[in-house]
Length: 208
Ligand SMILES: Cc1cc2nc3c(=O)[nH]c(=O)nc-3n(C[C@H](O)[C@H](O)[C@H](O)COP(=O)(O)O)c2cc1C
Image (tube, rainbow, N blue to C red; front, side):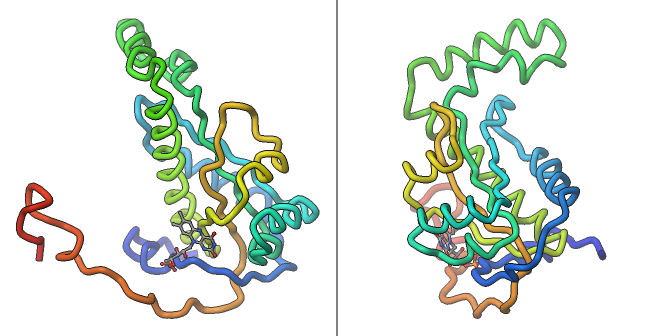
């Protein structure tokens, strides 16, 4: 498979909603998909992301029902349920175990203090990190020749129950991955650079 540039992958990736239900992604590709996704950055290297790789047809059907019948969940070969870990900071010593001792001694207690009792910050961070991982996963899948669709149209309590998500993890997104059967429609209405980017501050001149 020819290597894609990042720009090519960004252009190729679209939200694909129709998949070949008979196609099975090889396990080694699923492993590669996650291994590359783990290169994603996270605050303090806390790696808040956790993934349920749902391939079981009965589980996919249940997830489809918990998502108001969105059929791409049933038909895609793989449905990744991305969770964010609210307690990531508590395991900071594990994520810094290969750092020099003086770095660990300085940083790990600081991480604990930074998040201490701030539930909103912990939640923001879990969603931020897992969302960055979601984008990595979609780009890697694109490079590997698969189609994807990011999704938040699901009933969170039901999804938590179906994938048996541990307490203190939150569902961030689902991503369907598979072999698409239909070309995407043209993009419906994209903003331009000057609509979204401003020099130095948000009341600055638009970037053109
Ligand atoms: C966070 C997020 C949630 C989304 N949720 C859904 C969803 O529940 N169902 C769906 O079919 N598409 C969903 N989409 C796909 C968007 O509709 C799609 O990305 C958008 O229209 C832009 O199209 P494109 O991805 O092809 O560029 C979601 C996209 C994002 C980023």
